[in-house]
Image 1 (cartoon, rainbow, N blue to C red):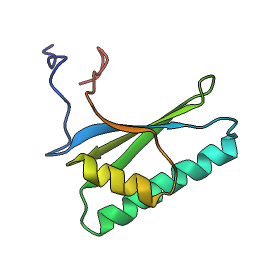
Image 2 (cartoon, rainbow, N blue to C red; image 1 turned 180 degrees about the horizontal axis):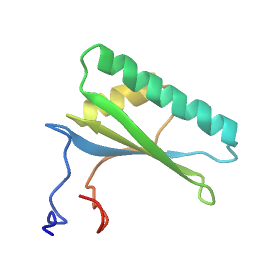
Image 3 (cartoon, rainbow, N blue to C red; image 1 turned 120 degrees about the vertical axis):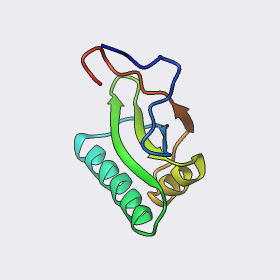
Image 4 (cartoon, helix red, strand yellow; image 1 turned 90 degrees about the vertical axis):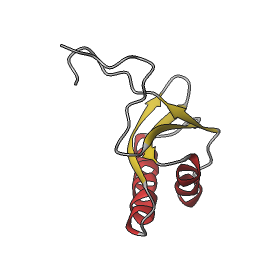
Length: 105
């Protein structure tokens, strides 16, 4: 079975992946659900206006108090705009490379 080279980014059409990091100390499960809804809603509003950005998912690292959110977009600017519209402070936005596991295409 052929595999993609690890250095080649997985793209969604002309989009690429971006990680957005947040530091959230003492956040509850209900608060995380509200944050996720805010990110999802902001991305949906921008997408409905024709912006090429999509919120994919988030992972919360409980011990470190870090929320890592994954977006697909054409550029960093679209990801920044969605995250600013969600009104949830973030520490960084970085381009990312998807490294699928051995059983994933």
